[in-house]
Length: 258
Image (tube, rainbow, N blue to C red):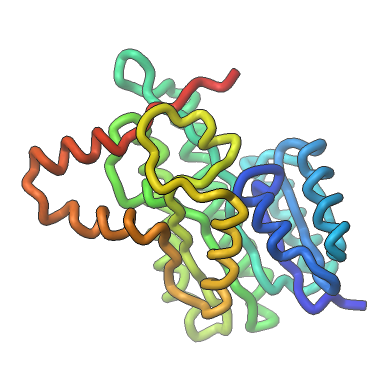
């Protein structure tokens, strides 16, 4: 029997991607989940199936566009996609010289921006014939801010934010809704490497619940938490020196992967 709902999530092996999979897991739901770590994906899939969902799992790097295209096309062939999350992401920071490494800069831009955009584009192409579906691009509050220690992360998430807003306008008349999601600090293996002041932390489960509740209304953007939204809105009107001090205060260093 064709599921009532088919949700595809990239980066589903941990963090908010895993939490989204468990939030949407239910009977008569098909989850297509991908990530780089097969063991973690299998754990996510097992928990989702225990909640009644049916799961399709694929382990690959989203920068492998042939694998990504195959995954999305095979998912669409299994059942029409109703919701796609372009969620996979990485984060690195500057080193002692105040700069990122070339390799980490490239990976950040390739995974967070290029692969996210390609994921949304392939999802849109799959949904066009059915004239329905939702696409959610996971950006970040960092995509609105020039944070001191994570310039490539900010740039990559800013690119995703603008692409999502533009894609929404392109698809308005074609039955496909596009939402750009900008979370603040959400507990995950990635955020566990953040060193410094990181206020208003949300659990991944709380973030996933909030996204699902808001996304059902088809908004242009979902941005949280409220206090961070207010702070970001106030930054442009602050004096330059105060703005710079606040940005440095709210910036975080990123520990190297072990």
